[in-house]
Length: 252
Image (cartoon, rainbow, N blue to C red; front, side, top):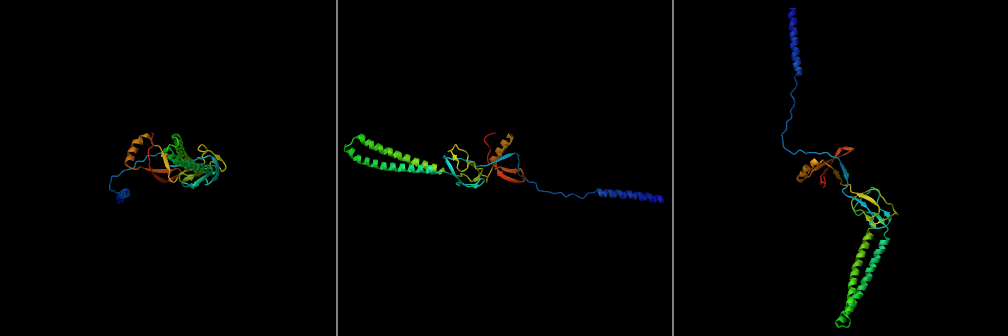
């Protein structure tokens, strides 16, 4: 009887162990997520390295020769179009303008006198009281003075332009760089040093290259859509900047 009980207990123990083992091996049903399939465009990205550049980058130079008497900005300052940057001593150019205006006034008086003389001699030539040569001389003098007056007007305009160049202004909205010339220095027209550089930074260009094999695909895509550009700056990888592809350069 003891032997039977031991056998029954052993068998029962094995059955319980088997059931327990299989019960532990069983896992709960997994959650399955479903979604409706749809057709859409998948963006294709091409990675590259680029260089940031300014769309407007101007080296400021003097257009007249003279001494710098004023600097009207601070280095690194934001400036706007037409803002005064440098002043070149204007005395010489003011005097040239006055001289040109005086020459015009003098020639206008001479023209008035010669015109009156010509008008008086018209009746005399009709009466043959003066020679044809004399009359043509009077007429030529009037024509010459007309031409001289036009030249005087051009000289006045040139003097005004040169005087305006004494006041060097920013041609763009941007930020100034390091000032290269101090007050008191003499600068030469057009051939002198760069006075300061001004760059536009409110908008920036990013120049980058791609492998030649992408050229056809990028061109085809540009004809159909505006292509997006995603920019990550070293040291600021957590932030992404966005832009648009403006154009493909004319060389491969």
